[in-house]
Length: 212
Image (cartoon, rainbow, N blue to C red; front, side, top):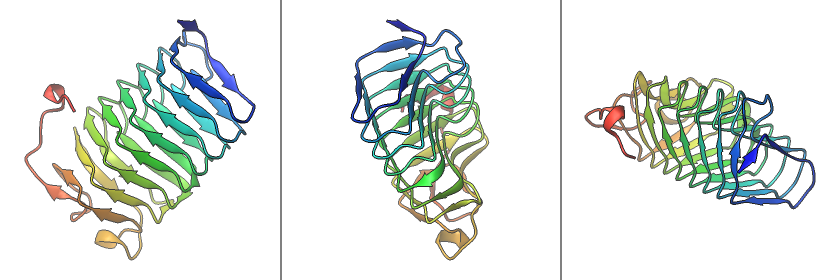
């Protein structure tokens, strides 16, 4: 077990198979900063006062098969990241968003399980474009299962399941896409939709009993 945090400042680094107890330190449990081609896989990150994993101003980062839980802010946060892939992770019980994409472009969030996070399950926000949110399951106690903010443009949201406490998918962007948004929404399943038309609405499941 690693007690503290890991900061990556070099290209072509792989972090694999660690259990990281952040012990309340301010940096994220794993921070990737101004790098290329970093791989973060098979790690467990918990107990931080910031994000579990943060990718900052970096290109071509792969974040896969990690478990992040009980961090004070995001489970996984991309900030000014480009061409990152966040795939097959579990993000539970964090104090912010389960997975957040803030600024940057061309990032992929796919096949993640996101549960019981205090804010949104998956949040694409601020000055960001051409991001894909695909085949994720977002359930829990927070705001929206999947939230696209007004500053996010040309997002594609496909084949997700979103059942959150207040709103399931929410898209505040404005354009010529699905339901008057600037995003493409296809083949999603939800309990509610704002605006209507983002998903196929089915009976809301209780997040406390969801195992997805």
